[in-house]
Length: 305
Ligand SMILES: C[S@@+](CC[C@H](N)C(=O)[O-])C[C@H]1O[C@@H](n2cnc3c(N)ncnc32)[C@H](O)[C@@H]1O
Image (cartoon, rainbow, N blue to C red; front, side):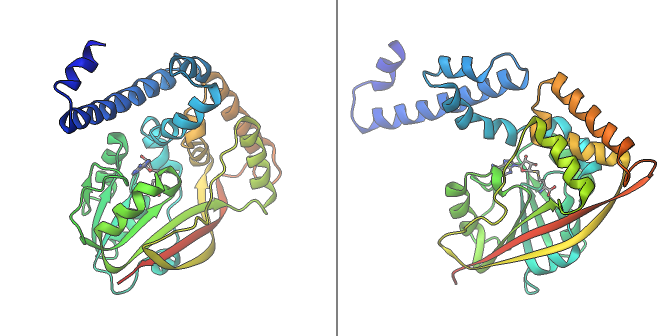
């Protein structure tokens, strides 16, 4: 191929470096094209697999996580309206009392960022999606909001005393994110991970989840292992309730990544089934305000000094 000859030039290490750069650029562009095709539903994983010389399962395994991770922009406003904040006691536990500066990584629309800013910490919030960032800037104007990702954090070395990741660790490439987080933390700094998990021991929540899982299931490891250079890994569960309206509950459902990425017909059907549940379940029907029970799962770990 002509392009290969051009990159190869006179050979040697310079050719290898040029080829490596070109492969990375092509890989990035291929991922973007796949995301475009999937978000507009112009190609199936079967067809994408064929075009990439791999099986349907191989293509879906490789790119669907990225497609989901980048889906939130399409539902940023619903995300802001429907998703819960985090209990103050969880934030107390995640951020050491001595910390002065904190990075909220994968900050989304600023659900956690707002709580950090209210504590008068110097807060940097990193978020890769422009639609989420515009909600974030409005929600937490005192934060230093930056475009970036967990795998390439736009901060100097040893810039912050604590890093927190709310509801986002499962989207990161942990092998790349962990050394990046260690780089931007001061020695002895902390990494905190947090997820709000709906409490299925309550009957109507279990019923809601049955409806959601009829369409798709998203398994998230909310007690992930965190390896070197971090240590002293500790866990905490906090039980609490979030009051929300019927419309906010529909927004909560609509802002799940697997709902955003569903074909329109399936999404409409799912939203209809959730509305029916709200209208018919004995614990829900006729209620203006609902109370969603959560178990907030927290993990914290310390960077070696
Ligand atoms: C479920 S939302 C959580 C947002 C926010 N932290 C919260 O608690 O509401 C996940 C966020 O992670 C972001 N994200 C996905 N992949 C990421 C990555 N590799 N690096 C940084 N953020 C990422 C998404 O854009 C999205 O805003």
